[in-house]
Image (cartoon, rainbow, N blue to C red; front, side, top):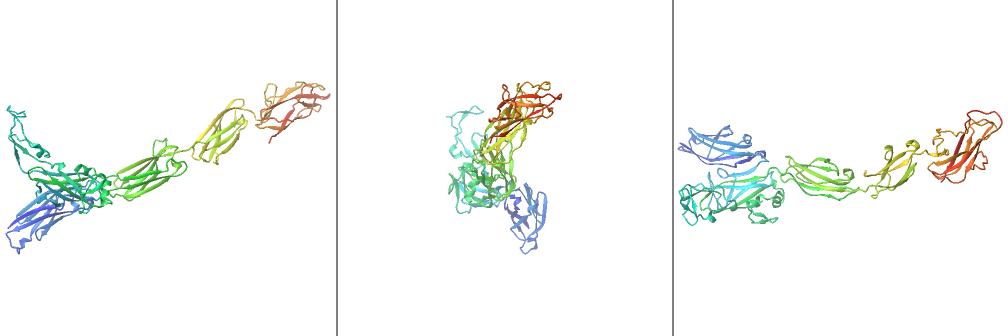
Length: 612
């Protein structure tokens, strides 16, 4: 009795562990020297050891038989798989490395030796356990899984010449090259025939050149793609063209978008069929050892057709729209950030929002989100594995500052606030950097204003700074500033030197000195000036007296003239007095014989009507 194991192979040589990928081991097991009716035919034991873990005990009932290995025993990276088959004292062991990968690292690797995951067509011959034998030309067709992938990164076919073949050369003294023994030779090789050999090792003998072909010339492999194995295409000048054979560089430069055009939907849900067309000028048989299709690692989602309209804006809304696609089928999140004009950092206008792998977004923003000038809007998109992409656009926010047309005097300021954009406006007032009132409620433009300050608000007989600030409803500000001389306000009496007798509140500053009078005497005539500091034009101004603390035999007399002085108890100013105008009048104290009083005081008053 003898045990013979033939044709061991694997259903695949790399596994996508995140996709619950599984592996099947196939082998032809033959037991010779016994009758089929013998119980020994069935008592063949096997064990499968993965990374030193023994999953044993099954009984093989017939040959050939498939062995199944639980996926849970595989790790990421290289996994050592040993198949052990025993029949009595006859033992067969075979060990092979299987690559475990995840969605981010998955590379389609077809190691032809012991690998059954490849479909083959054309003139390429398949030899179990040795690889593909290529003699001149042929094609290899591969079915490549693309789940969770969107773009090929690289493709590579590996081939070696297992035979120790030599090419005879001859000496040619036409071109002289010196060698160790002093002789001069030329090695004449048909470079056109061997130009695609990747390495040429020269043996010590000057009579022979040893060939060691390590990699099949890339220029001698072309590629076709198909989604159904019926129609084969290559990408040329922006479109997929039937039967156009692509070079390696053209394949590796394909984008996710271009792959999508071939499939008409998401490549990450498809299977790609690749046909590799092989050609070699090497005169000897080449053994194809492996084919590798390496995908890009996780790709960030793509943002298309992003736009902001309209631009620029004033008080209307601007709408941000964009299409977002994750070609690997990942769920995505997006958010919108805005950097206001003149500021350093972005702020979050809309925080992360979850969407499917293919979606469109639309968001609207108006002036509260921006500053006047150029503002930046950024879309950030990330997939469920954390890859982030972004798009940045700009939008110009325009706004005209309000204008103030104004006039002022020492007692008030008035004017009109205009806004060219038609925005509502407001204003506030400062005196000597002290805010007298804050912004009033907004009103439509144009807006008139008038502000009158009190004498208590300013420094009397000194310069004071008045500032009016205005702004529109979009917070664009403008201000005016001017200087005024602080004045008492109202109808004021002054002496001949321009000094006030009282304040506008009636507080005494100085007294009209009549000097001492003897009963029966009349005082000297005193000139007093009435000044209109009311900030208005006045009329019907009446000047009256109040005897206050005067004795009964003393009388206050008034007149507009000094000479002749015609005594009167009151005066009526018939003309209009504008703000700042003055009117002189005269005062005399008359007494009669009688009892006097020391320190007598009296008052003079003025009253007028404002001109309408």
